[in-house]
Length: 214
Image (cartoon, rainbow, N blue to C red; front, top):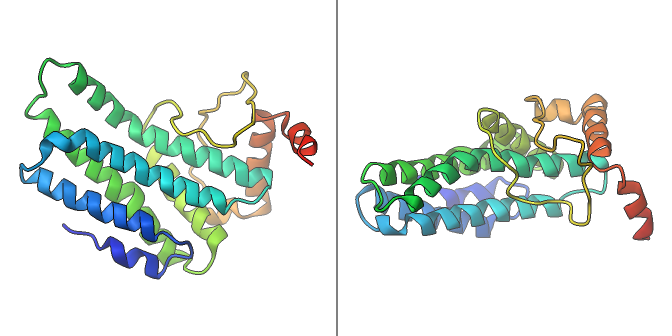
C-alpha cells in the first residue's frame, strides 16, 4: 500500500514538508526492495529512517518551551523511539556479523523498516494532525502519546541524546517508561506535575545551569 506523505503537511500545525519528502522517497525505496530490487541498499534505507526520526524529533524540540515538563516529554520521546529501533538494531547486527546476509532475514529487516516508518512516523503525524490540526503543543503531546504507547513493548538503550549540557542523576533509571498517558492527561496540571517531578529527579542541577546561563 502506498501512503500519501505529501498530503500530511496540509493539516499539520508544524512544517514537516522536508520530512515528508524524505518519507515519500524512503517509501518508494522500500516498495522497490519488497519487489526484489535494490535490496543491497537496505542499510542505506535504515540510515534514511534514522534521518527522518531525527528530523521529526528536532522539529518537535524547536517547539519546546523551557518548562521542565516539556523537557521531560522531549527526553522520553527520544527514548521511546530508541526502544522502537532496538529490535531493528539487533537484526542489523546479526546480519552484519554473518558471513553472508540471509535470504530470509533481509526481507524481514526491510519489512520492519517499513513498519516503523508507517506505524511510528506516518500514522503518528497523521493521527496527531487530525486530532489537533491547529494546536502545536497538543500535536506534540498526541504524537508522544502514540509513539510512547508503541514503544512500551520494546526495550533498548537511548540512541538520541536531548537536552544538551544536562548531566543526569546517575542514580536514576533514565529508561524508566512513562505509563501510557493520553495527550489530554499529560496536559493537565497533574500530568505536568508528574513530568516535572521526573525531570527534577533526573536532572537535579538544572536550576543551577539555568541560572548560570543568564
